[in-house]
Length: 144
Image (cartoon, rainbow, N blue to C red; front, side, top):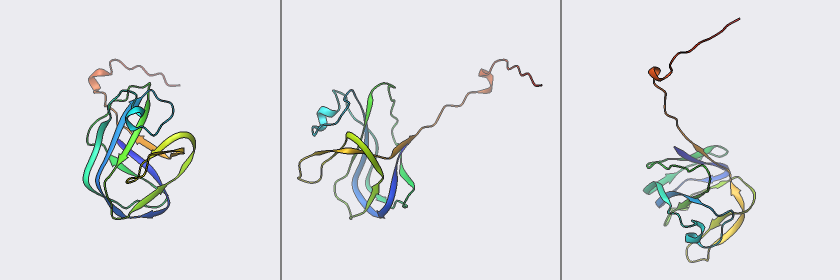
């Protein structure tokens, strides 16, 4: 599995320290400024971590990270995507976004958390399990 963002035309390469990506099921329909409360009683799963992550996104393309740990989505709850790092070399990759009520929460250094009314363009790429030839059974075809 891989999580990706669509980079805007404004990017700058940089290194992000203690970079992590976590996913968490939630029954919440909008975010508040309370990180723990947003989880809805669930525990986030860290699916990616690097002590030093160099990011050099190409403008107007998808960029992201392959999961180091799997995540089993339950198919019914909303999903929180939490990106966290502590210190960086000043790099950034602004992402395209669209209007969406209370879908993004942000906390920077000692500032208080804020909720914004937008959503980044993101996607998740999943793999699938193959089917072994012996499990196909009998196949019938009719051609005209």
